[in-house]
Length: 455
Image (cartoon, rainbow, N blue to C red; front, side):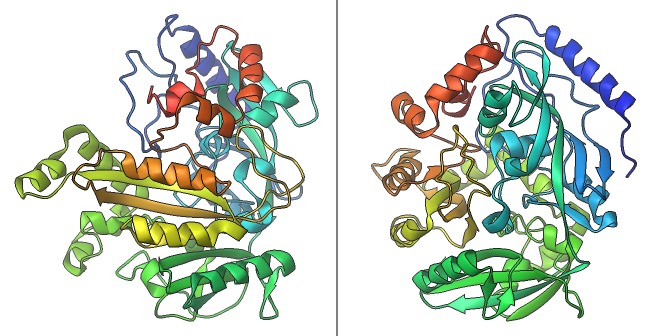
């Protein structure tokens, strides 16, 4: 791809500011985006969104400094296309192609390098933000906008929108070598996670990337990878399905590109809900359309029209509750949650992604303890609503259990917290101070209203 020049970027920022000024007072402010990785329905906007059409590219890659200047609406797919020719990748590449860099920073992201490099916002050197006051400010951890820099992660657009981000890059080899290690007790897997996080190795071999899958507490797999190696590379963009390979392959090789997008082709395992894992359907479904944004568009259509739900009711099946969550738990308590989840929520497989904050810095809107190992637990699907229960009861039970165990959950999906609990969990005091300074008229939707109120 051709990097965008600074003059082109400046023109795009001017267009964005003009579109912001054109939003009538009192009208909701939203981005006019073609794609979204949110899973919570929202009320109708009532006005046109902000024009971010020119803010979707890479401005510059500096292979010597190992940095990239990237526009806020640039997808990781386009970013990786710009960095891989230099043998570089972002420190953390979220698993879905159309997640934007700005979205991963303001809404959080994670992947298999997070056990070493933390979350995407921790590799941001500086960023330009369109604030609620309509100004563009450059925030860094050591300048007059350091308070905004710290509060921006997990603010989900309620404090402003990133127009440019300078991020760190890291080397990646042309191939990634993987070991898929089975555990018959998930507690043993978690002990192995702790050893890798302490030593950086497993069985004497260095580890660059680490994640895992639990099919049930008695069958889980830890995937340990290192950058480098040779051998025939597997292809999971055709008939083979990546997560199923964990059960049959002790070792594997993927190109760097295919490794970064290994989860996207089948949206982890959620493509099964659309029949895309059935042999005949898979052969007929073009591989270029087997990707997360296509599946997400299908989900949005279902949310809008409810065709599948009506068919289920016609067949006499119970209504179903959407349970789409990523939660972070202290490593020492993750086993308790996994056993509770297996007993109370009929859903599998489950993704496991170890992480820890990269440095001693803490981030007020998503409080985690520096130096403590965590595990992200991801589960995405629906469960039947049992007689006498209400839609949302399973999600509420999960929220309560995660809080009980000292964890947090990402806010890209349905949330049911009351205001007091939400404020306690997500740094309300720090948030309000920054909100009042950078959005004094509160033109941007409040974080709680956006997440829980679905505004």
